[in-house]
Image (tube, rainbow, N blue to C red; front, side, top):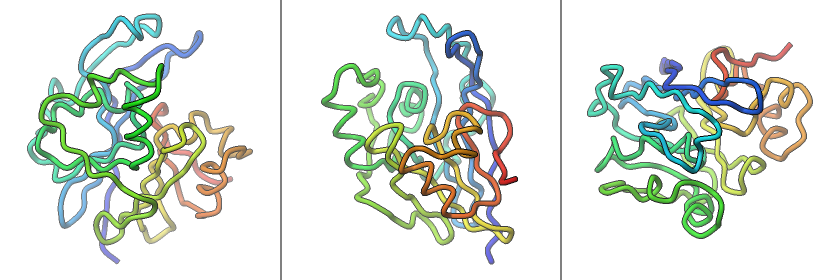
Length: 202
């Protein structure tokens, strides 16, 4: 089996109620190319000022944005697509329904961040293999067009979930179609966008 590594990178934090949550993106090191899952935020915006974002964008961390062969957006909420502009010209894979909703529904996201200059989307319809051992799988719940990334690994699948689950308890006791799908995959670990550590089955 091809060895594929998943590494979390914290790119900021924001307030959810009274709790400050990390904003985490995930780098997949694949023999055929580096994949980035979600892009975080690179600037502040009045629409989300109440969440008091603190930002540490990838480009400010010395991350080589040119090393990324493909980007995946799990969904297009502002804290997941706000760095898409850093990857102008790099294919960004997102479910077609998610892209349509982000462009047409209000309030949904910060639309100018979705269609920033030079951003190129690859609309995905349903399940798709991005590279050998890396699949994009629709996981509705957080949004209608949310998707997860499933990485084949020796000990069982590794899932990058975006916001399909925000807290571990949502995977302990799944309530949405996407959460139930993740549990049905019997993953060895699940990386969430707002946690520093992966969820693992008990």
